[in-house]
Amino acid sequence: MDADGGDIVQLTTSGIARWPQCSADSKQVYYSVAGSGFVGATLWAVPLAGGTPRQMLPPEASNTYEISSGRLAGCNVAVEMKNRWKVLDLASGRVVSDLALDESDNTGTTRLSPDSRAVVKPVLRGGSRTLLYQPLDGSAPHTLIDPVQETIRDFGWSPSGKQLAVLKLKSSSDVVLIKDEQGKGKD
Image 1: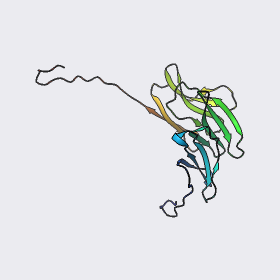
Image 2: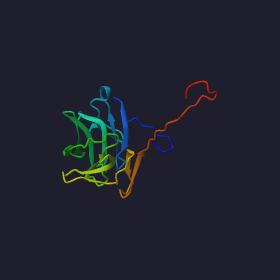
Image 3: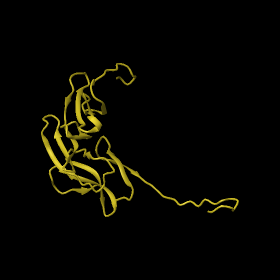
Image 4: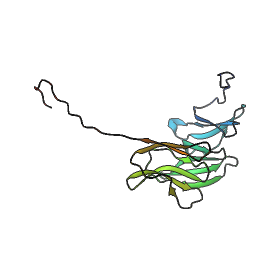
């Protein structure tokens, strides 16, 4: 629809379409269609002008996907009880990279880097959390931020890719003494 709410167009007609995202060129919409019980969710694309949706990622992918610059798509795939991040070229459907994911911290989001050269995800290092930049070419990974005690719930880059925002979840536990004001009960 237009910004004013007019010209509403229905782009999908089957399944439960979730997590829509416009392509970088604003010509199509990517979305996930969940299978039964969210098993077999996959990435689809449909032109914004309307047309036939096409499947972009394999059906064994989870409903977690990431698109980088409209050129690459990454998805989480479970292989023999281990998570892998499969990256495909959207134009050809060819697998560009298939990486074993560091599963030391599965509380945050896995993303493709803005330069389309790596997968970035929260990991545990020495009891603290950081973001690991894992290159698609298999070269050595490195951390992007100093380790923090808080859980890294989400992160994202500015449109230029030069700034990184990190959402940390801080929790605290307090002990409170509740005292009976009349002194008859137990503390």
